[in-house]
Structure formats: C-alpha cells, structure tokens
Amino acid sequence: MDDTLPQSDMNPADLTGPSHLSCDILIHGAHLFTMQGSGVGYLADGAVAVRGTRIMGVGPTADLRARFEPAEIIDASHCAVLPGLIDAHMHTPLAIFRGVAQDVSQWMQLGLAAFNQHLTSSAAMAGSQLNVLEALKAGTTTFGDYARPFPGWAEFYLQVGVRARLAATINALPPGGMAGWQVGDLYPLDNEAGCRSLDAAIRFTRHWQGAGDGRISLMLGPQAPDMLTRDQLREVKRLAQMEGLMIHMHVAQGDREISQMTQRYGMRTPEFLRQLGYLDQQLLAVHLTEASEQEAELIAQSGTRMVLCSGSIGIIDGIVPPAHAFREAGGPVALGSDQACGNNCSNIFNEMKLTALFNKIRFRDPTVMPAWEVLRMATIEGAEAIGLGDQIGSLRVGKQADLIVVDLRALNLSPVITDPVRNIVPNLVYAASGREVKTVMVAGRLLVRNGQVLTADENAIRSEAQVQATALAKRVAADPIHRGLALMQAMKKGQL
Image 1 (cartoon, rainbow, N blue to C red):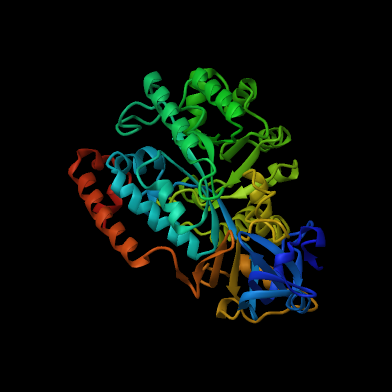
Image 2 (cartoon, rainbow, N blue to C red):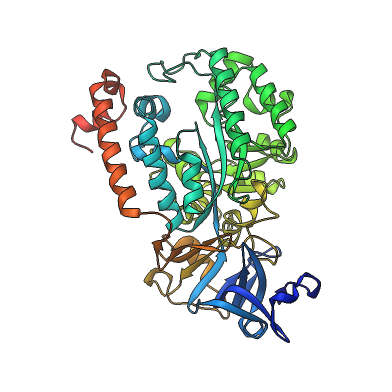
C-alpha cells in the first residue's frame, strides 16, 4: 500500500527536490493500522506523513522516507499507530462526582439526582476538564459530549485541541429535575422549561458550529423521548432538518423510560419514534438498553446509527444492549463511555474490552464481537455513526490527521507476534489499559507527547477538581435529600 497525494494535488512550492514533498511530521517504523478496507488495514513498518491538519501520505516507511522531506520525524518503532479513538457519548461534567451511582438500582433517581441538583457551573467545568484529559491521555481524539452548556465548556475543547461533537441537552423537566420524585411516578413536563431549553440549545449550536477550523461541530440533544412533549420533539426534528444537524438522543435507555412512554403514550419508545418520523440517518440513538433484538433490527434498517456504552450500562443496569443485532442488520455502532459517576472512567480501551466480553458471554459464543470488530467500532465505524466518516476514523490521504501511537513494549502488550498469527489487535483490545498511549495527534497537532499533555495543566486541573468535588459533596451532605441515596445503607454498614 502506498497512499499518497496524487501529482495533481501537489503545490510546486512543496517540492524540495525532484521527488520530495515537504511535510510537517513523518511518523515511521510503526505497526500501522489504517482501518482501510473491511479489516484493520495492517501494514508492517508503516509510515504516515502529515502536513497542516491532514494526512499527506500513508505507506511503507521506505517509500515515504524517500518521498517526503519532514520538518520533524517521530520514530514509532515497537509501536502501533492507529486512528484516534472516538468516544461518541459522554457526559464529562459528571466526572466531578465519579463513582457515586453504581451498584444500585434506579441509579438516576437514587444515585445521581441528589448530586446533580447541587452541580454548579464551576464544578461542571472542573469535572469536564478532568474527564477530557483522562480520555485524551488514553487515546480519545473525538469527544461526543452531551451536557447543558455552561461557561467554558466549548472553550476548553478549543484550548486543548481535540475534536468535539457537542450536543446541548434539551429537556422539559421542571426545576430540580428528578430529585425527590418517586420511582414509578409519571413525572411532569414543563412546557416553558422545554422551550427555554430548546432556545438555549439552538443559540449555542449556531454560535459554536464549525469553530476551531471545524474541530467543533454540533448536534441537537433532546435528552430522551420521555423528557420532552410530543410537540417539542417535533420541533427539534424540524430545526435539525433546517439546520442540517444530527440528533443525539438517549433511546430506550432503561425500564424507567419505557414505563414513562407506555404510561404517557401507550407504546414503547421504538414505535413512538417511528410514528414521529425520528427513525432515519439523522438520529444517533444512544444505548437501546431496553430495545428487543427485533426492535434493534428495525431501528438499524431505518438508517439510524447507534452508540453502545457497555461499561456504563453493564454497571448501572446489568444489561448488554442489542448492538450485535443492530450491526447484523447493517447499522453502524459507535462506542461511548457515558458518565463517570456510574461507569467510573472514560476510556475507550475499556469499552472495547467490555463490549467484546459482554457480548461473548451474552451469546455464549467466543466468536461474537471479535477484537477487530470492536476496534473498528472505536475508529472508522464510530466515525461513520457520528457522521464524520469522511473526515476521521481511518488513516487515509486527505483525511484529518487524528492518530495515536501506542507503545507495544509495555509488559501487558508484550511480546509482539506477527507470524503466523498477529497478536497486536487482540492485545490492544483485551490487554491495553490506555496508559500505553505515548503520542496523540489531532488535526496534525501534537496534544500528547511521551504521555504528557501539552495543551493543558494537568496538575492544576486535578487540584481544582478535588476542590470542587469536596465542596459539592458538602452541599449534598447538608441537604436532607442525601438520605434517600441508595448507597447510604452500604455506608452505614461500613461496606464503602
């Protein structure tokens, strides 16, 4: 494979000799995984040439060394180079109360709500910054973040230099959210709150769409079909079509939602969305936790895309969503880490491993969800699912230079075997922790080198997160609502 810019795309000013093109960075000597074709696109002793924000050349090291004159060379010997990982669904502000809502039933009402009620914009900012750096250092280059906008949210993505696919939360929940509601009650929807939320989301979307030379892009984020009125959902769809935006929405995300939908509309979520005209390529459906395999197949066949959050849903619901059926029906599936208050981390290596393991266990079949499939879900299939497959997800000339370098000399990734069977992809999926990521590049810019973030102060961000988390916990402890937290019994018994 020798994938370089054709002669017609060359600028004469770039020629440094009769056969040399100038480039900014040449990464060479790698075990290269391009994700081109239907597999992982492996190339031994491969190289990638980068100029500006884009990939100029992909091919054997010897060929690219002869063809390009780089300003900087990165030796990737003993390393894997692959496209940057895509975390298609996150709630980064919630990292500020990481780990407070697992090992419980009804995690949202009995675990999350009390903390969320006391979340200030300063605490949200601290949580988001912490979460972004955590994921970045583990190889995430594209962030599908989903939150109610707060000061500094989008600005931090600009500063750090990653790629963000932001969705501003839209819901019609009254002030206070779910705090204090009884499980099983049909919760009220506040029409005015929904309108204000939608208006704010549209303003935010129009302001930030395309920022950072296109690194920041937007979706509309109706929180869930049970959290907006039917008319408001119709308005979201109309605006999304008018603005040319995808819709990022939790769909069939738990028995709570299904109960609300059947009480309010007399039907399950998938049928409701079908009747409402939501099931098409514009929809990025997150979770499908309570969808049957038949419903998942029908949703996939409609052109809808899916995000699978194996770690989160495994911990907070004890369920393996029907992603296998969705993919078998032809629908693209991306991976997401969801939220750190229930999932405890934002690490796509973790999501790849759990996705493969959970599905093998569910189907009692070790061939289901093999390593190469989940690696594609974290890269090119994930890019296609979020509507960016023409820009990222594979190492191909003309695409954005989003890539990571992973050290295969780490004890847990050693030894490397390439013949007669290559063990690199299985080890990346089943053994990597994310700490093996040495280098992270987004749009041709190095954001992490030798494991160190170059564009933000990690120590300051960690310290501020601790200050904000301590203050938030004090506010929750002073509010009688904390007595209803499901984990209070475990606390009393000394189990935590």
